[in-house]
Image 1 (cartoon, rainbow, N blue to C red):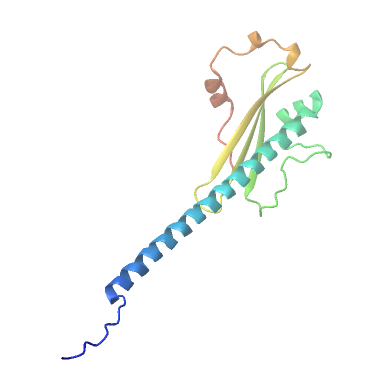
Image 2: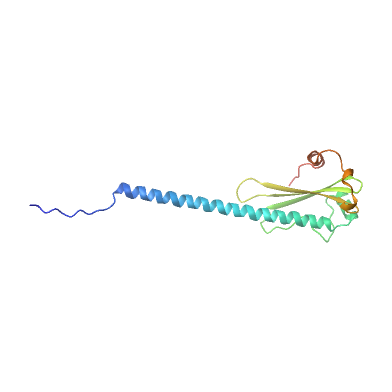
Length: 164
């Protein structure tokens, strides 16, 4: 009787290749998800920074007296020495701010602040904010005195597209 030689069990080459491909696919999907997560975190940071810029610009306007506001309408490039129109950014100049004031009627101004920024990837983004300012405060101004056109038509006609 012949003695059988013991069989060595193991994986075939095809099984090993398939296993490596499955592991590579899982790793690639995990890296793509991680990359997407980082991109979402960057977008969130940019959105927060833009909100801070808009709020800061509104505070600069809010602290001005009426003659200063009228000067900003007449001379858009005029700026007093106590404030700065453009907020310095720590992101290598990725954020650009443009402020426009329009006199709707005597004693009523409409302010528009536009912030444009270039994300690390993707197209440029823009966010804008509108607010009304009155000579004696908004509480002394009746909303019935506002123009009768819809807000979007009113705003479209007052402001040209910002040039950065």
